[in-house]
Image (cartoon, rainbow, N blue to C red; front, side):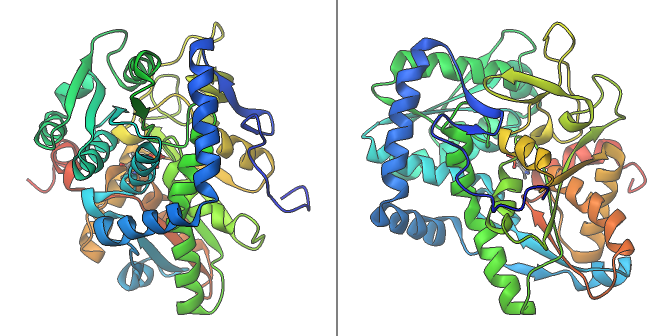
Length: 403
Ligand SMILES: *Cc1c(COP(=O)(O)O)cnc(C)c1O
């Protein structure tokens, strides 16, 4: 880090991480957001809430997840010792349930009988529908019509779980439009409704709240590695869509200066405009859906088209805290291409018997490139944010040689 002061106290009262973050929303959303920030401030300091959260994480979601020593992958790559944080083993198959549980408990505290969510690939929609079912809350999920068609299986899952899926037909009919529609619903129904946002994105207090709920995975990883190795790791890596699984891993290590942190964005087909979702490679400072951060857009502020083989990384903005950690020099960001991710997908499947989500495969791709350059005495932790069952059909279109 360039500055020698410890990293603490972010975001500030107005939701800023340095110049990033904030509350860039229409006037009508300011009151509900301030109210949410106050409520969250109460529960974060309430041991009874924490106890309840811990209970459901453990008994329902399946925490703690293992920190697994990937012995064969380590040997194959011939460098750093590789540990995988197994978020893929959680109920519903990814880290998203951590945040969905935290927020549904908050909704209950606020006595809101209805929750809404946006979803791109459907993973966050499924996590939200799941926790809503478990607590008997009404649930509406907004999804772009194009995404709903591509992810028909997740649409069916959400319906099976009792949620109503509303398809959005404006604009590109994908995640961005689904978020806008969810915000509109929230403004209209705020008295009865909590909006469960799915990543460390959007207006304050969401980036902070989602980070805190996801930090459970980093806290566990920190304790687990200290127990297994008697020391902190040298390197952490995670894929970065909105940035929630990455910040969940990084945050509990942020003041451990010896621990390097690397986020991996979607490099898509290449880093030409419209072919990727690497905000730090092609983005500029901008505002999108409530927050100021790095955004892929043109000179007129039109949001650029994005592409990634993994739907979960395919969004034009990155969580504001990542922009700040990068500016401070505390975290670094790189990207992996679709091809590299697909290679990671196959490699982990074959060598460890673990089929990773295509999102997580980006972190595996970075590991494959990085571990061999590190000494055998070094230790790295890779966040395996989710399992790849959902991606098998997509992968089969790209990986032909299996026949
Ligand atoms: C949604 C998703 C991501 C991307 O979201 P983040 O907020 O960046 O973590 C990554 N991995 C999996 C498995 C996902 O479902």
